[in-house]
Length: 88
Image (tube, rainbow, N blue to C red; front, side):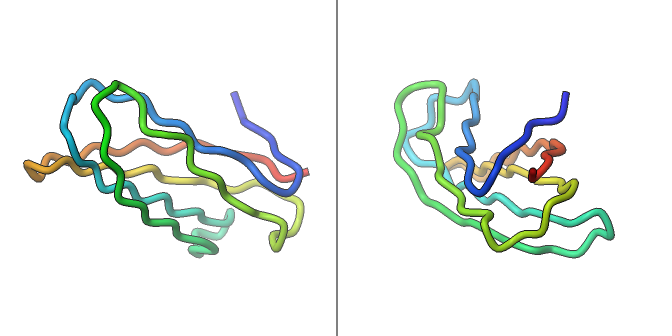
């Protein structure tokens, strides 16, 4: 399923690591594979969800994009996932 947004969206990531500190990076790419945005956030968490991260994509033209969500815990363990999204 492709997520859609108008001009902004919130990224939410669930994880199984109860680490006290997470480094989160969200990279957004256009259909040609060019990086159009990058967000980096450090967060402390004791629950299985990263606090929602707001992203303003109003500068993008309507179309299909791919984002890669990468999380690294305080022990250096990294996990990532990619998803498509459609700007309307």
